[in-house]
Structures are given as structure tokens and as C-alpha cells.
Length: 150
Image (cartoon, rainbow, N blue to C red; front, side):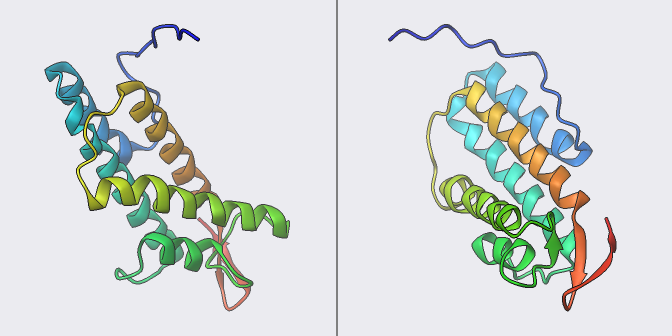
């Protein structure tokens, strides 16, 4: 099965200002230089922005990260952040963040990944942008009660 050549835009519509400023310049520099083996750095930075933001919104400690952060923020009976009143949707959100941390973040944080396809890196940045949006829109919970919206 042949694949069509991917179209890479000169920019991607990343709405989150911090994610845009910390990642797109790196992406463009590595793509222009042809150093696609450095694109893992872009994903490292993007997932670091995601972790930092979740900690801030959920008001969690700095030593809470990765899978533990996903669980504290979105998992269990009393998550720090509520994204849905539907239990299955809240659980799915927890699993989504857990998957990003466990599958995407851990690969680029714990080893040099090597050459990555630029179009896939942009897709992941777009997903991180969406996850930032969801976390920012979540209701912060304290002891099972709503503490306001963020």
C-alpha cells in the first residue's frame, strides 16, 4: 500500500501560547536543518509543558509527575480535576492522559528516540494542545467538592 506524501504546513495552529512558544521554533529549526533525530526534544518540551500545566491547574506538588500526575489529576473517585460528570468519560480522560505520559512522554524523556517523522511530531503537538485545553477547562475539586472552574 503506497502512502501519499504528507503535507507539512509552514506552521500548525497551536492555540496554547506557551506550547507554541516553547515548541514550534524548535520544530522549525530541526526540520529546516534536517536534524529530524532531534525532534524528540520538541516532544520532551511539549510534554513538560503539559505536566507543568496540569500540576498548576490541579494545584499538585512539583514532585507529582507522569503516571502519578495523571492519576492524581484525573483518576479515582476524587480526582483533582473533573472533566466530566459521566464516570466512564472521566475514567477515559484519565486513561488518555496516562497514555500520553506512559507512551509518548516516557519514550522521549528516558532515551534518545532517533529520527522522527515531522508530520507525526506536529500531530502529537496538536494532541498536547488539545489536552492542555481540556485540563484548563476542568473543574478543580477539593475533597470531592467543586472549587471553581479554571
